[in-house]
Amino acid sequence: MPPITRLLPRKQLTSLKPTPPTRYLTTSSIRPTRQIKTQPLISPRTHPTRTSTSTLQTRSRSYHSSLHPSLPPHAYTNSQIAILEASLSHVPTHGFTHASLTLGARDAGFLDVSVQLFPRGEFDLILFYLASRRGLLRAKAESEDFFREFATKNGIDASSLEGKEKVDVKIKMLILERLRMNDNIRDQWSDALAQMSLLGNIPLSIAELHALSNDILNLAGDESVDASWYTRRAAVGAIYASAEVVMTRDTTGDMSETAEFVERRFEDRDILSKKVEVIGQCFSFWGNTVLGVGRSYGLKV
Amino acid sequence: MSTMSARSAWRTLHYSAKRRAFQPSTPYRCFSCSRASQDPKSDHERMTHFGFRNVPESEKESRVGAVFSSVASSYDQMNDLMSLGIHRLWKDHFVRSLNPGSPLSARINNPQQKGWNILDIAGGTGDIAFRMLDHATNINHDIETRVTISDINADMLAEGRKRSIDTPYYNTSRLDFIEANAESMPHIPSNSVDLYTVVFGIRNFTDKQAALNEAFRVLKPGGVFACMEFSKVDNPVFDAVYKRWNFSAIPLIGQLVAGDRDSYQYLVESIERFPSQEEFKGMIQKAGFMAPGRGYENLTGGIAAIHKGIKPVTKA
Image (tube, rainbow over all chains, first blue to last red):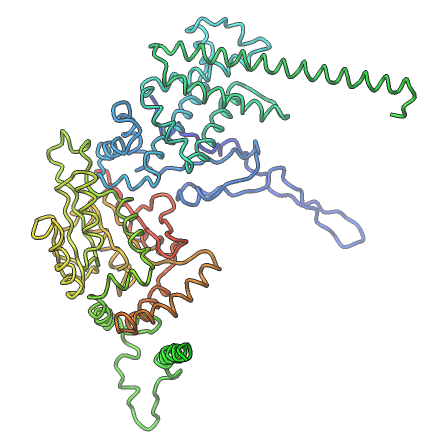
């Protein structure tokens, strides 16, 4: 397994091309020469190196841009990552608790008191778990044959990966894969969900859920640019979150109950979207008919 | 009639304070004699601030000493009056967030775990020390954690000793008192302390950076420096109310209750002169500590702030 530090979602600075050097075009005329400055397509921006975490945490943007991928909501220092990573190995036995953090700190060569590095306590551990699993999922999905392998392992027809429904099929695969990552902490996850539902923790939990659904859709190759961008993310988020709750009570060894649940939610979603479509068609038909009848009676519309 | 007399009493107090603070804008200069040039303190010695006044560094220690010797006996009563009792909530919150003591789950199967070694600087009256020991004992069931109270002022330590008689920690190895200057503590070995706390004390230090460096030295790698101190209020409206309270009410309460106006005048002036949250965080980082998260936590809108720093672990 590659080190977690490299898998944590990070800003993709490499995708930005360096700006071309600014050129000046001079026009020869009788009037005083003006210089026309060519506007570079990408505005020149300096990207500070990751030296201090505090400056990064305060920076946030209120817009979305594919040229500038969104900043990660959490930035960890090396010591924090060392402790959190060590703590995760204690989670299956001690849960997402202070005890896990303390034991992790000790494993990483720190003292009991060093858990002061995490002002949010257990919730920091939960956030780290979510963010690191998200990074792992991305690393997996970006590897060559993830979808094909997943299909053969689970008896899914590989031709569906090329057909019209390929995005939906991939989304389902990614959700199931992400849920299976929770397998060894399944019994502790209800505690984590309880922590995440505390009033002060809700904004960060929602942000993390959105980041996950965003990642899943991007990795599945979704390219919607209309209002469905929002509805799709909301739908994936809702399906994943509800599946997590089902997972905590799933007694089957291989999570087949959860997989079935996800399957049913996707069917529901399809039925729902079809219903909405049919209702829309019905209304537009009646609207047009009424308009036509009105016009035939001489209404100036 | 009574309101009139009360008002005139109030005026007297008010004006006497102003008169007391009056200082000539130019120092004494005599052209016919060489007294000014003989004044040894004028140029050579480094100056530091004592409230709003500048005093030589060598003098600050004794002046602060005088202030705290005079307030030691009425310290708790005055804190309650000045902060309207809120200081107790701050202190409780401070100790709870530090969670001193190793919980049972971490001590089991680990015999070499001997509890925390806590150093409470400027904790003469034992406010924080007793709270931390209580927390370790009652919450974490850790009866090994011990606190060393260090204070520069013998009167404050005597007050703490007197109070410790009423606690279960009196005359046990868990509680220790030493009189020391926090800027240099040669009797405390390097890398020996788990938790270093200084609550409402660092404001009075002559050289704060030296104290921070000393804290860094005595802490074990991974140890925590935690400091609660008055700070800057961020809301301007609340700040105006707070300043009014500080500069009008607190010296008055000091005069009426403790019979010592000057000490409390110094107190509010030293609060005003203490660096802001961000500046002080910079000082902590300069000493070598890592600041977790934002580095500080504001209490009651920034009247007080808890600063934390962790000594990094260097991998061999």
